[in-house]
Amino acid sequence: MQLRFAYRGTGEEYVSAKGWEQTTLKRCPLHPQGGCHFARHGTYARISPPGTLICRYYCPEGHRT
View 1 (cartoon, rainbow, N blue to C red):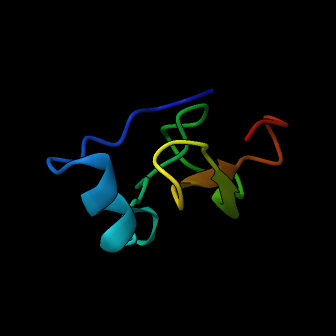
View 2: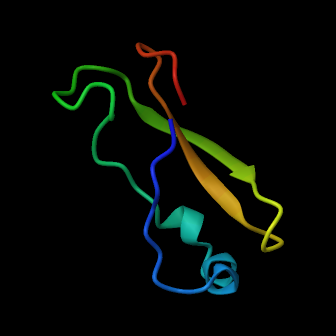
């Protein structure tokens, strides 16, 4: 599942500001009522612009990142 984090700057500004460190999800999209062990799950790289990382989260109960 992918959710878009709206960033107001350019891709290059996202990389410079390390935008992936500012990204947060307050609750699991699969379990909005809570009760699961939803947590941050690292990052993965995008090709463009160079240096772009995308934040990942994981729900073990839903078996989804």
